[in-house]
Structures are given as C-alpha cells and as structure tokens.
Amino acid sequence: MSKQIIQTADAPQAIGTYSQAVRVSGGDTVYLSGQIGLDAVSMQMVNGIDAQIQQVFLNLKAVATASGGSLNDIVKLNIYLTDLDNFALVNEIMAGYFTQPYPARAAVGVKALPRGALVEMDAVMVLQG
Image 1 (cartoon, rainbow, N blue to C red):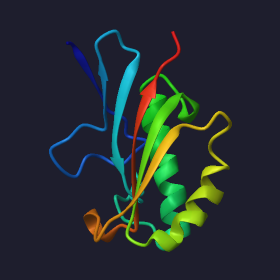
Image 2 (tube, rainbow, N blue to C red):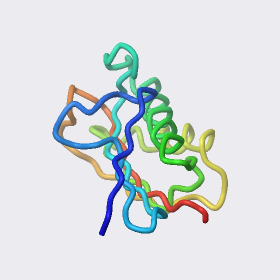
Image 3 (tube, one colour):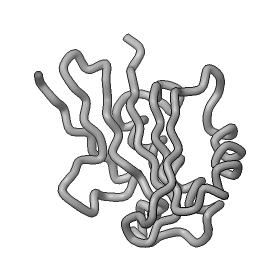
Image 4 (cartoon, rainbow, N blue to C red):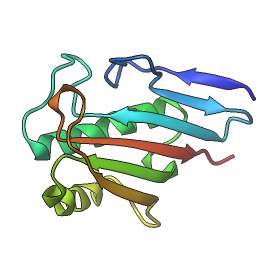
C-alpha cells in the first residue's frame, strides 16, 4: 500500500500526531481526519454551535479540495456531538453543503472533544476516476 499525505493551509493545521488527510493506493480513496470548528487562519475556535458546524464543513471542504475532490465525493461522514440536541441543526446546515445522493453517515454523542469543540466530523472520500 502506498499513501500520499494531504496538507492545505486552507484548513486548520493538525493539532496532534495526524495528517489532515491520507490518500491510499490507487489514489481513489481519501481518509479525512476529524475537523473541529477552528478557523484556519487564527487557529481559534469559532463561537457557538451554528458557527462551529459551518466551520467544520468549510474545513472538510478545504481538505477535500486539496485532495482533488469535493464534499460530494464523500461516501461516509462521521459526526461527533457533545449535545445530540444539535443533531437537527447539523442536518439543516449539512443540506447547504451536500446534494443528493447523500453520504452514509453516523452521528455519535460524546462527552468532550478537543479544544472544547461542540462538534467534530471526519470522512471517507472516493474520488471519481
């Protein structure tokens, strides 16, 4: 297996021992690391759940673009929320970033996220040949 590390200044830099994304083997599958609501320029968390959800999608979009794809190439999206009452808001905002057919998805309630984030998302993307 060969792998290509994806890195872009348009998304927050890694705050740990991980890459923003990794493309494997034939180049069709890309694994996008979890994104939280950090602004890529200031590396500060944006305020409020609405803004954090929007920022997470913008960060995922930046990494998807740097990988040669788009959000519509995502086949699996994992969402982690510190409050599952925000699930409907995620759906509402997600509809502005994705078109049908939507990716497979999981939403998980968690106790805490890095940097006090309220939401985190990671994804698997398959690039169209």
